Length: 429
Image (tube, rainbow, N blue to C red; front, side):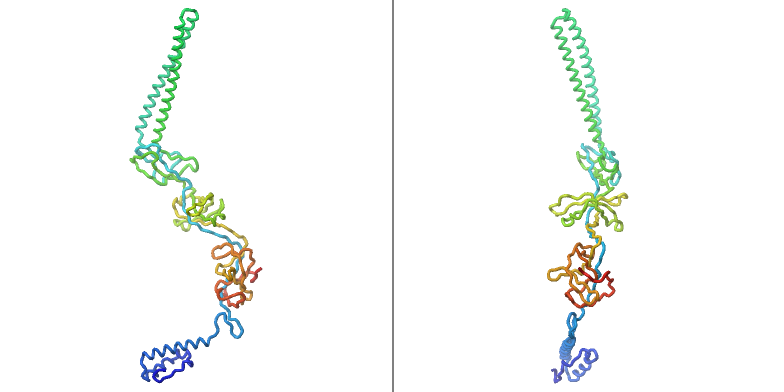
């Protein structure tokens, strides 16, 4: 009640507000001298009362019963699918060369010539780096000279042996005739034995100098650094260069990296869950950010028998053909494998899966599309938005939206009437 005016709010209708009742009431209030502040409070009270009574006059809600009948629950449905279903999984990986080694010198020295550079192709056994070799050439010359002296000494020793042998034979003849004394015979024999030993010493010294010359030549050859390998293609590629001409390097200093990039390896790491599903020879689709529209094909060639303790993952190597050398070591890759495939199986949309009383199931739409039935299921693998149903003959349509408002036997109204029908009607065994 405001300033002598009494309003019966029980007789208000919200339509009165929309059809001008507010305007006429405001004019009546103003004519009675009511202030704007009082007018605002009064209107707020009136509108609240109108809304309350209007809702009391609308008893029908979703899922309620009116005059003994159920109110249909609006739902959306999707057809149960029958046919092949595959489990595809994409793993992140890295492109690596099939083979890689570091070219390093066995001796130290200054780099006098560098014959290849990064990205150049090299052949098996090709000379790639030349170290300064003047000192080693001189060592070879000295070894050759010593070998010549040793050869001359051997020749001289052999000549002395021949002379000592003739002297021994002559002295022996004279001794047998009684002309030479026994001491003369012993002296000739001792001279022969000494000459024989000198020959052996000369021959041993000759072999020593030959070995010294061979060693000097080997060390000279070490100044010519070659890229050599045993297996794989006869040609490979220089991946990196670590030195420049003029650098002084120590033994085993990294000079170049040589890689084999046709084919390459796409390396991924898999968890224990996926490990049993990976097989040697399995086909793989490989994609990279550098060529997003290009799909490369490879196959699994090696699966690690151990898991890393730090990550609990196992290494898998995928061999990918790379004839045009587009794939480069170090690139990021996405490798897609078909882990499982069911030729003829039943699957439903993942949106239809729901839980009731700690059981997993779906709501199956009846053939007349008026009610739903709760069906318990055993989910299998997930492929995209489809979930495989294990040992199921389910067919028809299942609810994918509105499950929270229905229960077994609920009356429903299909909101997406254009949904494609499932073959064979709604049946389950």
